[in-house]
Image (tube, rainbow, N blue to C red; front, side, top):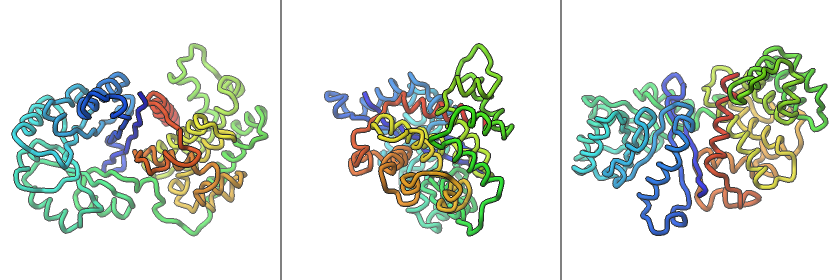
Length: 404
């Protein structure tokens, strides 16, 4: 059974990742023709997330998961470990006595409850008293209305999460209003597009990345390039000797690392570690998103039979957030890189043969899987991946982040 799964980060006021909301969908009508959607969802949760391990999918952070009214009444969330799960109650759930009793029982078992797309109305107070978090659509709800709502619930021991925060200005406003958690894609956009040049140290790192990804690069030149930066050498050796590879014999030279991993894999590690050095005063999630997007682009290219080198797709995904990392226009950044016209076209114009794979990765990471999205169009029409392949992407990203 093919399963799409995505995760959206939830930040605290310090822009540290507090949790992830998990989004998932499969062909329920095809996979379970004789079972209703609620039962199918329960089986999906049990078979996929429990067997895989929520702590692996979220890197040990909490997982926010939506549950329907029927699933709540049947206390289906209790099949998942309470230390990793936040039970999201959807806005269309009727807070009747059965729902209240089920949520109370789950709260007593240590499950945290969040009310999604919150709108206050009569009869909701018993459910609010059981909730830890109230999620408010920050774009759809005017600030004055949010302030009135917070005043009305001043006696309730709840915390507030702002959803759909899309800019740093919105993040700052929500923080000033008393929100403690934030969900949205503001973190992967530049704070300000500055009309200045890049610092020489950053240009050097960009040039290292560009040189490492030249098509005519060989082992000797790659080894020398890595050795010019002691911290890069250290990080690559630390990565290859990490528990991720379960090695018994330690590798202690760059040459051995290149031979063991292969030139293409070392290029990726070098690109990622150099990119990590460019990140400054940014959420860790921005670097994680860059790595995940890079690996997804490469995976989609491999599965979809991309005609070119899939390592170039990896670099495309990695650089798709470079404007946010450096707070600089992507056109300025690319001036310092020996990349192809197709690469530049995909990043700056969202067109050309490589653009489809980046568009797919962006849709995928945000959980956009409707028929009209880019999953079903162009060169990416028939690309499908399984949950264990996505798990490998997240696992690889987490392993890389531990060394950067």
